[in-house]
Amino acid sequence: SGGDFLGPILPAVAEICSDFDPTQDVEPSLLKLFRNLWFYIVLFGLAPPIQKNQVQAKPASTLTSLASMSALALQAVAGPYMWNGQWSMAVQRIAQGTPPL
Image (cartoon, rainbow, N blue to C red; front, side, top):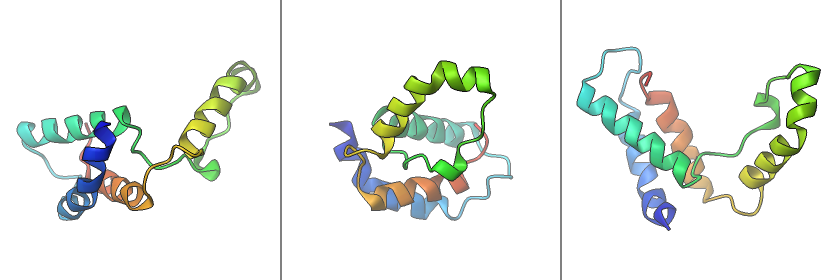
């Protein structure tokens, strides 16, 4: 799959992104590269697993209506299909250097 090709280069991309300051203005061409990178990270499911302490509390009505869907999402992200741990760490480092899209 595409994740098998993109995953191994994520640590190198993260190293490059460590030099970026996300608060500065970015050229449109570079912004497009970041947008495309995040598209493929999401498409191939290479984002790190959702941590339970990062999930914000929802109102009761929303929580009850989305209970089964969110349970499935958490299983899919944190379940046996999770990618290499180095790739997840690299994605977290990329997120820290990504300018606002």
